[in-house]
Length: 618
Image (cartoon, rainbow, N blue to C red; front, side, top):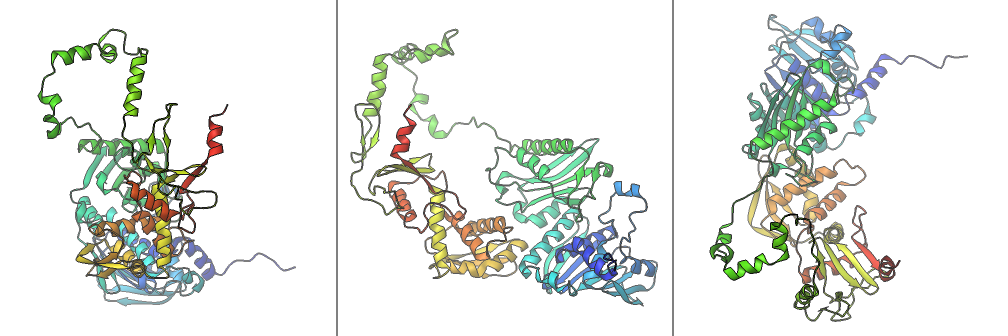
Protein backbone atom coordinates (compact mmCIF):
# COMPACT_ATOMS: atom_id res chain seq x y z
CA UNK A 1 0.00 0.00 0.00
CA UNK A 2 1.42 3.37 -1.04
CA UNK A 3 2.23 5.95 1.60
CA UNK A 4 -0.33 8.76 1.69
CA UNK A 5 1.83 11.28 3.54
CA UNK A 6 4.75 12.85 1.74
CA UNK A 7 6.96 15.90 2.13
CA UNK A 8 6.23 18.94 0.00
CA UNK A 9 8.97 20.16 -2.36
CA UNK A 10 10.87 23.16 -0.95
CA UNK A 11 9.57 25.65 -3.53
CA UNK A 12 5.93 24.77 -2.74
CA UNK A 13 6.52 24.84 1.03
CA UNK A 14 8.17 28.26 0.64
CA UNK A 15 5.22 29.61 -1.34
CA UNK A 16 2.76 28.39 1.29
CA UNK A 17 4.84 29.95 4.08
CA UNK A 18 5.14 33.16 2.07
CA UNK A 19 1.36 33.47 2.09
CA UNK A 20 1.43 34.23 5.83
CA UNK A 21 3.98 37.02 5.48
CA UNK A 22 3.48 38.48 1.97
CA UNK A 23 -0.24 38.91 1.39
CA UNK A 24 -0.02 41.91 -0.96
CA UNK A 25 2.62 44.42 -2.19
CA UNK A 26 2.25 46.44 1.01
CA UNK A 27 3.35 43.41 3.07
CA UNK A 28 6.66 43.27 1.18
CA UNK A 29 7.11 47.03 1.53
CA UNK A 30 6.71 46.75 5.31
CA UNK A 31 9.30 43.96 5.61
CA UNK A 32 11.88 45.67 3.38
CA UNK A 33 11.52 49.03 5.12
CA UNK A 34 11.90 47.43 8.55
CA UNK A 35 15.04 45.59 7.40
CA UNK A 36 16.48 48.94 6.26
CA UNK A 37 15.70 50.47 9.67
CA UNK A 38 17.36 47.54 11.45
CA UNK A 39 20.44 48.02 9.25
CA UNK A 40 20.97 51.44 10.85
CA UNK A 41 20.07 53.47 7.76
CA UNK A 42 19.68 57.25 8.00
CA UNK A 43 18.20 57.48 4.48
CA UNK A 44 15.61 55.09 3.04
CA UNK A 45 14.12 55.37 -0.44
CA UNK A 46 11.12 53.37 -1.64
CA UNK A 47 10.47 53.08 -5.37
CA UNK A 48 7.38 51.30 -6.74
CA UNK A 49 5.84 50.73 -10.16
CA UNK A 50 2.32 49.54 -10.92
CA UNK A 51 1.37 49.80 -7.23
CA UNK A 52 4.14 47.35 -6.32
CA UNK A 53 2.93 44.61 -8.67
CA UNK A 54 5.73 45.30 -11.19
CA UNK A 55 8.45 46.65 -8.89
CA UNK A 56 9.20 47.27 -5.23
CA UNK A 57 12.67 48.67 -4.60
CA UNK A 58 14.16 49.81 -1.29
CA UNK A 59 17.49 51.63 -1.19
CA UNK A 60 19.19 52.36 2.15
CA UNK A 61 22.54 53.63 3.38
CA UNK A 62 22.75 51.14 6.25
CA UNK A 63 25.63 48.90 7.22
CA UNK A 64 25.18 46.47 4.30
CA UNK A 65 26.15 42.77 4.17
CA UNK A 66 29.20 40.72 3.24
CA UNK A 67 28.97 38.14 0.38
CA UNK A 68 28.09 35.18 2.62
CA UNK A 69 25.43 37.06 4.57
CA UNK A 70 23.94 38.36 1.30
CA UNK A 71 23.18 34.79 0.22
CA UNK A 72 22.20 33.41 3.62
CA UNK A 73 19.70 36.24 4.16
CA UNK A 74 17.28 34.52 1.75
CA UNK A 75 17.26 31.19 3.60
CA UNK A 76 14.20 30.46 5.76
CA UNK A 77 14.58 31.47 9.42
CA UNK A 78 17.93 33.11 8.71
CA UNK A 79 18.30 36.02 11.14
CA UNK A 80 20.94 38.08 12.88
CA UNK A 81 18.57 39.05 15.68
CA UNK A 82 17.99 35.75 17.51
CA UNK A 83 20.55 33.34 18.91
CA UNK A 84 18.68 31.82 21.88
CA UNK A 85 15.05 31.36 22.92
CA UNK A 86 15.51 34.03 25.60
CA UNK A 87 16.14 36.60 22.88
CA UNK A 88 12.52 36.30 21.79
CA UNK A 89 11.53 38.09 25.01
CA UNK A 90 13.96 40.99 24.58
CA UNK A 91 13.11 42.06 21.02
CA UNK A 92 14.13 45.63 20.23
CA UNK A 93 14.46 45.33 16.46
CA UNK A 94 11.73 45.45 13.82
CA UNK A 95 12.39 42.10 12.14
CA UNK A 96 13.63 39.00 13.93
CA UNK A 97 12.06 35.80 12.57
CA UNK A 98 14.12 35.63 9.37
CA UNK A 99 11.07 34.94 7.21
CA UNK A 100 10.76 38.19 5.24
CA UNK A 101 13.40 37.80 2.53
CA UNK A 102 12.76 34.07 2.17
CA UNK A 103 9.05 34.74 1.66
CA UNK A 104 9.72 37.52 -0.86
CA UNK A 105 12.13 35.31 -2.80
CA UNK A 106 9.45 32.58 -3.01
CA UNK A 107 6.90 34.78 -4.82
CA UNK A 108 8.96 37.36 -6.77
CA UNK A 109 12.07 37.82 -8.89
CA UNK A 110 14.61 39.38 -6.52
CA UNK A 111 17.92 41.14 -7.07
CA UNK A 112 20.15 42.46 -4.29
CA UNK A 113 23.18 44.75 -4.26
CA UNK A 114 24.90 45.40 -0.96
CA UNK A 115 28.23 46.64 0.38
CA UNK A 116 29.81 47.20 3.78
CA UNK A 117 31.87 50.32 4.48
CA UNK A 118 35.14 48.42 4.90
CA UNK A 119 34.79 46.62 1.54
CA UNK A 120 35.82 48.10 -1.84
CA UNK A 121 33.30 46.05 -3.81
CA UNK A 122 29.83 44.91 -2.94
CA UNK A 123 27.89 41.76 -3.73
CA UNK A 124 25.14 41.21 -6.31
CA UNK A 125 22.68 38.33 -5.77
CA UNK A 126 19.85 37.32 -8.14
CA UNK A 127 17.16 34.93 -6.89
CA UNK A 128 14.15 33.31 -8.56
CA UNK A 129 11.83 30.65 -7.12
CA UNK A 130 13.85 30.73 -3.89
CA UNK A 131 16.99 29.67 -5.75
CA UNK A 132 20.15 31.80 -6.09
CA UNK A 133 20.75 32.00 -9.82
CA UNK A 134 23.64 34.45 -9.85
CA UNK A 135 26.22 35.85 -7.41
CA UNK A 136 28.94 38.29 -8.39
CA UNK A 137 31.00 41.23 -7.07
CA UNK A 138 29.66 44.65 -8.04
CA UNK A 139 30.50 48.33 -7.56
CA UNK A 140 27.80 49.95 -5.43
CA UNK A 141 27.36 52.44 -2.58
CA UNK A 142 27.52 51.40 1.08
CA UNK A 143 24.20 49.98 2.16
CA UNK A 144 21.63 47.75 0.48
CA UNK A 145 19.60 48.08 -2.71
CA UNK A 146 16.97 45.35 -3.04
CA UNK A 147 14.46 45.02 -5.87
CA UNK A 148 11.57 42.60 -6.17
CA UNK A 149 9.82 42.38 -9.54
CA UNK A 150 6.62 40.74 -10.77
CA UNK A 151 5.08 39.88 -7.42
CA UNK A 152 3.26 36.51 -7.46
CA UNK A 153 4.51 35.80 -10.99
CA UNK A 154 4.66 32.11 -10.09
CA UNK A 155 1.35 32.12 -8.17
CA UNK A 156 -1.12 33.60 -10.69
CA UNK A 157 -4.14 32.68 -8.57
CA UNK A 158 -2.78 34.86 -5.74
CA UNK A 159 -2.04 37.71 -8.15
CA UNK A 160 -5.64 37.65 -9.39
CA UNK A 161 -6.84 38.46 -5.88
CA UNK A 162 -4.93 41.75 -5.75
CA UNK A 163 -7.12 44.87 -5.80
CA UNK A 164 -6.95 47.84 -8.17
CA UNK A 165 -3.72 49.84 -8.35
CA UNK A 166 -5.23 52.71 -6.36
CA UNK A 167 -6.35 50.32 -3.60
CA UNK A 168 -2.96 48.57 -3.42
CA UNK A 169 -1.14 51.92 -3.48
CA UNK A 170 -3.26 53.05 -0.55
CA UNK A 171 -2.09 50.03 1.48
CA UNK A 172 1.54 50.71 0.54
CA UNK A 173 1.24 54.32 1.68
CA UNK A 174 -0.24 53.14 5.00
CA UNK A 175 2.75 50.85 5.68
CA UNK A 176 5.25 53.46 4.52
CA UNK A 177 3.65 56.09 6.76
CA UNK A 178 3.70 53.86 9.83
CA UNK A 179 7.41 53.11 9.54
CA UNK A 180 8.21 56.76 8.81
CA UNK A 181 6.24 57.91 11.87
CA UNK A 182 8.07 55.44 14.09
CA UNK A 183 11.51 56.74 12.99
CA UNK A 184 11.37 60.49 12.31
CA UNK A 185 15.17 60.70 12.63
CA UNK A 186 15.43 58.85 9.29
CA UNK A 187 14.96 60.49 5.88
CA UNK A 188 12.19 58.74 3.88
CA UNK A 189 11.08 59.15 0.28
CA UNK A 190 8.51 57.39 -1.88
CA UNK A 191 8.41 57.39 -5.68
CA UNK A 192 5.49 55.88 -7.59
CA UNK A 193 5.73 55.32 -11.35
CA UNK A 194 8.53 57.87 -11.55
CA UNK A 195 6.63 60.55 -9.59
CA UNK A 196 7.75 61.82 -6.19
CA UNK A 197 5.00 61.16 -3.65
CA UNK A 198 6.76 61.79 -0.31
CA UNK A 199 10.00 63.51 0.55
CA UNK A 200 10.35 63.66 4.33
CA UNK A 201 13.53 65.06 5.82
CA UNK A 202 14.80 63.74 9.15
CA UNK A 203 13.43 65.73 12.09
CA UNK A 204 11.52 65.64 15.35
CA UNK A 205 8.46 63.55 16.13
CA UNK A 206 6.23 66.62 15.73
CA UNK A 207 7.75 67.53 12.38
CA UNK A 208 7.11 64.02 11.09
CA UNK A 209 3.56 64.11 12.49
CA UNK A 210 2.90 67.33 10.54
CA UNK A 211 4.41 65.71 7.42
CA UNK A 212 1.94 62.84 7.72
CA UNK A 213 -1.20 64.61 8.96
CA UNK A 214 -0.74 67.80 6.93
CA UNK A 215 0.14 71.42 7.65
CA UNK A 216 -3.40 72.10 8.89
CA UNK A 217 -2.44 70.17 12.07
CA UNK A 218 0.36 72.62 12.94
CA UNK A 219 -1.77 74.28 15.63
CA UNK A 220 -4.15 71.39 16.25
CA UNK A 221 -1.89 68.92 18.06
CA UNK A 222 -1.69 68.56 21.84
CA UNK A 223 1.54 67.09 23.21
CA UNK A 224 1.26 64.01 25.44
CA UNK A 225 4.11 63.12 27.77
CA UNK A 226 4.11 60.96 30.89
CA UNK A 227 7.10 59.08 32.30
CA UNK A 228 6.93 56.40 34.99
CA UNK A 229 9.19 53.61 36.18
CA UNK A 230 7.02 51.13 34.30
CA UNK A 231 6.59 52.89 30.94
CA UNK A 232 6.86 56.15 29.03
CA UNK A 233 4.06 57.61 26.93
CA UNK A 234 4.71 60.40 24.42
CA UNK A 235 3.30 61.77 21.20
CA UNK A 236 0.31 63.88 20.22
CA UNK A 237 -3.47 63.89 20.19
CA UNK A 238 -5.52 66.08 17.88
CA UNK A 239 -7.78 68.74 19.31
CA UNK A 240 -11.48 67.82 19.26
CA UNK A 241 -12.10 69.65 15.97
CA UNK A 242 -9.82 67.16 14.18
CA UNK A 243 -12.08 64.18 15.03
CA UNK A 244 -13.24 62.22 11.98
CA UNK A 245 -15.81 59.61 11.05
CA UNK A 246 -13.08 57.00 10.46
CA UNK A 247 -9.94 55.83 12.26
CA UNK A 248 -7.66 57.04 9.45
CA UNK A 249 -5.45 59.28 11.65
CA UNK A 250 -4.86 56.96 14.59
CA UNK A 251 -1.40 55.54 15.24
CA UNK A 252 -0.16 53.49 18.18
CA UNK A 253 3.48 52.46 18.54
CA UNK A 254 4.99 50.21 21.18
CA UNK A 255 8.80 50.31 21.27
CA UNK A 256 8.71 51.95 17.81
CA UNK A 257 6.54 49.18 16.36
CA UNK A 258 3.10 50.03 14.93
CA UNK A 259 0.37 48.00 16.64
CA UNK A 260 -3.37 47.50 16.42
CA UNK A 261 -5.17 47.42 19.75
CA UNK A 262 -8.91 47.99 20.13
CA UNK A 263 -8.32 47.89 23.88
CA UNK A 264 -6.00 50.91 23.87
CA UNK A 265 -8.13 52.71 21.27
CA UNK A 266 -10.95 52.47 23.80
CA UNK A 267 -8.76 54.07 26.47
CA UNK A 268 -8.19 57.14 24.29
CA UNK A 269 -11.80 57.34 23.16
CA UNK A 270 -12.84 57.30 26.83
CA UNK A 271 -10.45 60.21 27.53
CA UNK A 272 -12.31 62.22 24.83
CA UNK A 273 -15.76 61.56 26.33
CA UNK A 274 -17.85 64.71 26.12
CA UNK A 275 -15.40 66.44 23.78
CA UNK A 276 -16.30 64.87 20.43
CA UNK A 277 -19.52 63.41 18.95
CA UNK A 278 -20.22 59.76 19.78
CA UNK A 279 -19.74 58.54 16.21
CA UNK A 280 -16.45 60.38 15.69
CA UNK A 281 -12.89 59.20 16.33
CA UNK A 282 -10.05 61.30 17.78
CA UNK A 283 -6.77 61.74 15.92
CA UNK A 284 -3.57 60.69 17.67
CA UNK A 285 0.01 59.51 17.26
CA UNK A 286 1.16 57.90 20.51
CA UNK A 287 4.38 56.12 21.43
CA UNK A 288 4.69 53.69 24.34
CA UNK A 289 8.13 52.65 25.52
CA UNK A 290 8.10 49.65 27.84
CA UNK A 291 10.51 46.92 28.86
CA UNK A 292 10.39 44.32 26.03
CA UNK A 293 10.03 41.57 28.63
CA UNK A 294 6.58 43.01 29.43
CA UNK A 295 5.41 42.56 25.82
CA UNK A 296 4.88 39.54 23.57
CA UNK A 297 5.07 40.65 19.94
CA UNK A 298 5.23 37.16 18.49
CA UNK A 299 1.49 36.50 18.58
CA UNK A 300 0.71 37.22 14.92
CA UNK A 301 2.64 36.82 11.63
CA UNK A 302 2.38 40.56 10.83
CA UNK A 303 3.60 41.47 14.35
CA UNK A 304 0.89 44.17 14.55
CA UNK A 305 -0.96 42.48 17.39
CA UNK A 306 0.83 42.21 20.70
CA UNK A 307 0.11 41.12 24.27
CA UNK A 308 1.05 43.09 27.37
CA UNK A 309 1.86 41.35 30.61
CA UNK A 310 -0.59 43.71 32.35
CA UNK A 311 -3.12 45.23 29.96
CA UNK A 312 -5.00 47.10 32.69
CA UNK A 313 -1.94 49.10 33.77
CA UNK A 314 -1.22 50.15 30.18
CA UNK A 315 -4.89 51.09 29.68
CA UNK A 316 -4.95 53.25 32.81
CA UNK A 317 -1.66 55.00 31.95
CA UNK A 318 -2.74 55.79 28.38
CA UNK A 319 -6.11 57.15 29.43
CA UNK A 320 -4.62 59.24 32.23
CA UNK A 321 -1.87 60.63 29.98
CA UNK A 322 -4.34 61.78 27.32
CA UNK A 323 -6.73 63.27 29.88
CA UNK A 324 -3.85 65.10 31.53
CA UNK A 325 -2.69 66.51 28.19
CA UNK A 326 -6.18 67.73 27.29
CA UNK A 327 -6.62 69.32 30.71
CA UNK A 328 -3.22 71.07 30.54
CA UNK A 329 -4.20 72.73 27.29
CA UNK A 330 -7.62 73.74 28.64
CA UNK A 331 -9.46 71.49 26.23
CA UNK A 332 -11.38 69.52 28.85
CA UNK A 333 -15.03 70.62 29.33
CA UNK A 334 -15.44 73.70 31.53
CA UNK A 335 -18.19 76.09 32.57
CA UNK A 336 -18.22 79.53 30.97
CA UNK A 337 -19.12 82.10 33.60
CA UNK A 338 -18.77 85.13 31.32
CA UNK A 339 -22.00 87.00 30.55
CA UNK A 340 -23.10 87.94 27.06
CA UNK A 341 -22.98 91.71 26.51
CA UNK A 342 -26.66 91.75 25.51
CA UNK A 343 -27.62 90.20 28.84
CA UNK A 344 -26.01 93.10 30.69
CA UNK A 345 -28.54 95.49 29.13
CA UNK A 346 -31.66 93.64 30.31
CA UNK A 347 -33.99 95.33 32.80
CA UNK A 348 -33.40 92.54 35.31
CA UNK A 349 -29.72 93.55 35.44
CA UNK A 350 -29.93 97.31 34.94
CA UNK A 351 -32.95 98.16 37.14
CA UNK A 352 -33.15 97.32 40.89
CA UNK A 353 -36.15 95.40 42.21
CA UNK A 354 -38.94 97.46 43.78
CA UNK A 355 -40.29 96.85 47.32
CA UNK A 356 -43.50 95.49 45.78
CA UNK A 357 -41.55 92.98 43.70
CA UNK A 358 -39.47 91.90 46.71
CA UNK A 359 -42.59 91.33 48.86
CA UNK A 360 -44.29 89.38 46.09
CA UNK A 361 -41.24 87.15 45.71
CA UNK A 362 -40.83 86.57 49.45
CA UNK A 363 -44.46 85.43 49.82
CA UNK A 364 -44.12 82.62 47.23
CA UNK A 365 -43.73 78.96 48.21
CA UNK A 366 -40.67 78.65 45.99
CA UNK A 367 -38.88 81.37 48.01
CA UNK A 368 -39.77 79.61 51.25
CA UNK A 369 -38.31 76.34 49.98
CA UNK A 370 -34.93 77.99 49.52
CA UNK A 371 -34.84 80.18 52.62
CA UNK A 372 -36.62 78.35 55.44
CA UNK A 373 -34.94 75.58 57.40
CA UNK A 374 -35.85 71.97 56.49
CA UNK A 375 -37.92 73.08 53.47
CA UNK A 376 -35.58 72.03 50.63
CA UNK A 377 -37.41 68.74 49.94
CA UNK A 378 -40.90 69.90 50.91
CA UNK A 379 -43.41 69.96 48.01
CA UNK A 380 -46.38 72.16 48.93
CA UNK A 381 -49.93 71.24 47.90
CA UNK A 382 -51.05 73.19 44.82
CA UNK A 383 -54.19 75.22 45.42
CA UNK A 384 -57.16 75.12 43.05
CA UNK A 385 -56.58 78.75 42.10
CA UNK A 386 -53.01 77.97 41.04
CA UNK A 387 -54.27 75.01 38.98
CA UNK A 388 -56.65 77.31 37.14
CA UNK A 389 -53.80 79.74 36.44
CA UNK A 390 -51.84 76.96 34.72
CA UNK A 391 -54.89 75.93 32.70
CA UNK A 392 -55.46 79.50 31.58
CA UNK A 393 -51.83 79.66 30.46
CA UNK A 394 -52.37 76.78 28.01
CA UNK A 395 -55.82 77.85 26.91
CA UNK A 396 -54.50 81.31 25.99
CA UNK A 397 -51.92 79.87 23.58
CA UNK A 398 -52.48 81.09 20.01
CA UNK A 399 -53.75 78.43 17.61
CA UNK A 400 -52.32 77.72 14.16
CA UNK A 401 -55.17 78.11 11.62
CA UNK A 402 -57.55 76.76 14.24
CA UNK A 403 -55.67 73.48 14.40
CA UNK A 404 -54.90 73.42 18.14
CA UNK A 405 -58.03 73.27 20.26
CA UNK A 406 -58.67 72.99 23.99
CA UNK A 407 -61.44 70.47 24.76
CA UNK A 408 -63.18 69.97 28.04
CA UNK A 409 -61.07 67.02 29.16
CA UNK A 410 -57.81 69.04 29.43
CA UNK A 411 -56.10 67.12 26.59
CA UNK A 412 -54.85 68.41 23.26
CA UNK A 413 -55.99 67.03 19.91
CA UNK A 414 -54.78 67.72 16.38
CA UNK A 415 -57.49 68.62 13.88
CA UNK A 416 -56.84 68.57 10.14
CA UNK A 417 -57.91 71.65 8.20
CA UNK A 418 -58.45 69.49 5.10
CA UNK A 419 -58.89 65.84 4.30
CA UNK A 420 -56.15 65.63 1.63
CA UNK A 421 -54.09 62.45 1.82
CA UNK A 422 -50.50 61.55 0.94
CA UNK A 423 -49.94 58.57 -1.30
CA UNK A 424 -48.53 56.22 1.28
CA UNK A 425 -47.85 52.55 1.78
CA UNK A 426 -50.68 50.12 2.22
CA UNK A 427 -52.56 50.69 5.44
CA UNK A 428 -51.25 54.23 6.03
CA UNK A 429 -53.02 57.39 4.85
CA UNK A 430 -51.56 60.70 5.98
CA UNK A 431 -53.43 63.98 6.12
CA UNK A 432 -51.73 66.16 3.55
CA UNK A 433 -52.50 69.54 5.17
CA UNK A 434 -52.39 68.52 8.80
CA UNK A 435 -50.19 70.39 11.25
CA UNK A 436 -47.04 68.33 11.78
CA UNK A 437 -45.15 68.26 15.04
CA UNK A 438 -41.34 68.05 15.22
CA UNK A 439 -40.09 66.32 18.36
CA UNK A 440 -36.58 67.06 19.66
CA UNK A 441 -35.73 68.45 16.20
CA UNK A 442 -35.31 64.82 15.13
CA UNK A 443 -38.70 63.12 14.76
CA UNK A 444 -41.79 64.20 12.85
CA UNK A 445 -45.15 63.22 14.30
CA UNK A 446 -47.75 63.01 11.53
CA UNK A 447 -51.45 62.15 12.04
CA UNK A 448 -52.67 59.23 9.95
CA UNK A 449 -56.19 57.99 9.22
CA UNK A 450 -56.08 55.29 11.90
CA UNK A 451 -53.51 56.68 14.36
CA UNK A 452 -50.22 58.46 13.70
CA UNK A 453 -46.71 57.75 12.44
CA UNK A 454 -43.37 58.84 13.91
CA UNK A 455 -40.79 59.61 11.23
CA UNK A 456 -37.02 59.87 11.77
CA UNK A 457 -36.17 62.90 9.63
CA UNK A 458 -32.55 61.98 8.88
CA UNK A 459 -33.23 58.35 8.01
CA UNK A 460 -36.25 59.33 5.92
CA UNK A 461 -34.20 61.83 3.93
CA UNK A 462 -31.42 59.25 3.48
CA UNK A 463 -33.94 56.92 1.79
CA UNK A 464 -35.16 59.73 -0.47
CA UNK A 465 -31.63 60.69 -1.53
CA UNK A 466 -30.51 57.08 -1.91
CA UNK A 467 -33.22 56.35 -4.47
CA UNK A 468 -32.52 59.64 -6.27
CA UNK A 469 -28.79 58.87 -6.59
CA UNK A 470 -29.56 55.32 -7.69
CA UNK A 471 -31.67 56.66 -10.53
CA UNK A 472 -28.83 59.05 -11.42
CA UNK A 473 -26.71 55.99 -12.19
CA UNK A 474 -29.06 55.40 -15.11
CA UNK A 475 -29.65 59.03 -16.03
CA UNK A 476 -26.80 61.37 -14.90
CA UNK A 477 -27.73 64.01 -12.35
CA UNK A 478 -27.78 67.70 -13.31
CA UNK A 479 -24.70 69.80 -12.43
CA UNK A 480 -24.61 73.47 -11.51
CA UNK A 481 -21.37 75.20 -12.49
CA UNK A 482 -19.53 76.96 -9.67
CA UNK A 483 -19.20 80.70 -10.15
CA UNK A 484 -15.95 80.60 -8.20
CA UNK A 485 -14.33 77.12 -8.55
CA UNK A 486 -12.88 75.80 -5.30
CA UNK A 487 -9.38 74.28 -5.06
CA UNK A 488 -9.19 71.19 -2.88
CA UNK A 489 -5.84 70.03 -1.44
CA UNK A 490 -5.73 66.49 -0.08
CA UNK A 491 -3.32 64.07 1.51
CA UNK A 492 -1.74 61.60 -0.88
CA UNK A 493 -3.97 58.74 0.28
CA UNK A 494 -7.14 60.85 -0.08
CA UNK A 495 -6.03 62.12 -3.49
CA UNK A 496 -5.63 58.54 -4.69
CA UNK A 497 -9.08 57.67 -3.32
CA UNK A 498 -10.70 60.68 -5.01
CA UNK A 499 -9.12 59.75 -8.36
CA UNK A 500 -10.63 56.30 -7.96
CA UNK A 501 -14.20 57.59 -7.53
CA UNK A 502 -14.07 60.78 -9.59
CA UNK A 503 -15.98 59.28 -12.55
CA UNK A 504 -18.74 58.01 -10.28
CA UNK A 505 -18.99 61.45 -8.65
CA UNK A 506 -19.54 62.96 -12.10
CA UNK A 507 -22.63 60.77 -12.60
CA UNK A 508 -24.30 62.20 -9.48
CA UNK A 509 -23.46 65.80 -10.37
CA UNK A 510 -19.94 66.63 -9.16
CA UNK A 511 -17.53 68.06 -11.74
CA UNK A 512 -14.01 67.69 -10.32
CA UNK A 513 -10.72 67.94 -12.20
CA UNK A 514 -7.09 67.22 -11.19
CA UNK A 515 -5.22 70.46 -10.42
CA UNK A 516 -1.59 69.59 -9.78
CA UNK A 517 -0.07 67.16 -7.31
CA UNK A 518 -2.70 66.00 -4.78
CA UNK A 519 -4.88 69.00 -5.67
CA UNK A 520 -8.25 69.15 -7.40
CA UNK A 521 -10.55 71.91 -8.58
CA UNK A 522 -14.31 71.65 -8.01
CA UNK A 523 -15.94 73.10 -11.13
CA UNK A 524 -19.51 72.06 -10.38
CA UNK A 525 -21.77 70.44 -7.80
CA UNK A 526 -25.14 68.61 -7.94
CA UNK A 527 -27.91 71.02 -8.89
CA UNK A 528 -29.81 70.47 -5.66
CA UNK A 529 -26.82 70.97 -3.36
CA UNK A 530 -26.33 74.39 -1.74
CA UNK A 531 -23.06 75.97 -2.87
CA UNK A 532 -20.48 77.40 -0.49
CA UNK A 533 -19.46 74.24 1.34
CA UNK A 534 -18.07 72.16 -1.54
CA UNK A 535 -14.65 71.53 0.01
CA UNK A 536 -15.97 70.24 3.32
CA UNK A 537 -18.59 68.14 1.53
CA UNK A 538 -15.97 66.30 -0.54
CA UNK A 539 -13.65 65.79 2.47
CA UNK A 540 -16.55 64.35 4.51
CA UNK A 541 -17.58 62.17 1.58
CA UNK A 542 -14.08 60.68 1.40
CA UNK A 543 -14.10 59.95 5.13
CA UNK A 544 -17.44 58.18 4.88
CA UNK A 545 -16.29 56.24 1.81
CA UNK A 546 -13.32 54.93 3.82
CA UNK A 547 -15.79 53.83 6.48
CA UNK A 548 -17.52 51.61 3.89
CA UNK A 549 -14.30 50.46 2.18
CA UNK A 550 -13.97 47.27 4.21
CA UNK A 551 -17.35 45.96 3.08
CA UNK A 552 -16.65 43.90 -0.03
CA UNK A 553 -20.26 42.90 -0.73
CA UNK A 554 -21.05 46.33 -2.21
CA UNK A 555 -19.77 47.78 -5.46
CA UNK A 556 -17.78 50.99 -5.47
CA UNK A 557 -20.75 52.92 -6.86
CA UNK A 558 -23.15 51.47 -4.28
CA UNK A 559 -20.80 52.55 -1.47
CA UNK A 560 -20.57 56.02 -2.99
CA UNK A 561 -24.35 56.36 -3.31
CA UNK A 562 -24.82 55.35 0.33
CA UNK A 563 -22.15 57.82 1.42
CA UNK A 564 -23.73 60.64 -0.58
CA UNK A 565 -27.16 59.91 0.85
CA UNK A 566 -25.87 59.87 4.42
CA UNK A 567 -23.77 63.00 3.97
CA UNK A 568 -26.40 65.12 2.20
CA UNK A 569 -29.38 64.14 4.37
CA UNK A 570 -30.80 66.61 6.87
CA UNK A 571 -29.44 65.74 10.28
CA UNK A 572 -31.07 64.84 13.55
CA UNK A 573 -31.25 68.02 15.59
CA UNK A 574 -32.05 70.27 12.62
CA UNK A 575 -35.17 72.40 12.98
CA UNK A 576 -37.70 72.09 10.13
CA UNK A 577 -40.65 74.24 9.15
CA UNK A 578 -44.10 72.94 8.22
CA UNK A 579 -43.43 73.17 4.49
CA UNK A 580 -40.10 71.32 4.81
CA UNK A 581 -41.67 68.52 6.84
CA UNK A 582 -44.55 68.12 4.39
CA UNK A 583 -42.13 68.02 1.44
CA UNK A 584 -39.97 65.40 3.17
CA UNK A 585 -42.96 63.16 3.93
CA UNK A 586 -44.32 63.51 0.43
CA UNK A 587 -40.90 62.59 -1.03
CA UNK A 588 -40.53 59.64 1.35
CA UNK A 589 -43.83 58.03 0.41
CA UNK A 590 -43.08 58.56 -3.27
CA UNK A 591 -40.08 56.21 -2.86
CA UNK A 592 -40.17 52.62 -4.06
CA UNK A 593 -39.23 51.43 -0.56
CA UNK A 594 -40.18 54.19 1.88
CA UNK A 595 -40.20 52.21 5.11
CA UNK A 596 -36.45 51.42 5.50
CA UNK A 597 -33.06 52.93 4.68
CA UNK A 598 -30.53 51.21 2.43
CA UNK A 599 -28.98 49.69 5.56
CA UNK A 600 -32.33 48.31 6.78
CA UNK A 601 -33.08 50.85 9.54
CA UNK A 602 -36.75 51.88 9.75
CA UNK A 603 -37.57 55.38 8.48
CA UNK A 604 -40.82 55.58 10.45
CA UNK A 605 -42.93 53.68 12.98
CA UNK A 606 -46.70 53.31 12.53
CA UNK A 607 -48.84 53.65 15.67
CA UNK A 608 -52.31 52.17 15.03
CA UNK A 609 -55.33 53.43 16.94
CA UNK A 610 -56.02 49.99 18.42
CA UNK A 611 -52.46 49.66 19.69
CA UNK A 612 -52.56 53.13 21.25
CA UNK A 613 -55.87 52.41 22.98
CA UNK A 614 -54.40 49.22 24.39
CA UNK A 615 -51.64 51.18 26.08
CA UNK A 616 -54.25 52.95 28.22
CA UNK A 617 -56.36 49.90 29.04
CA UNK A 618 -55.85 47.91 32.21
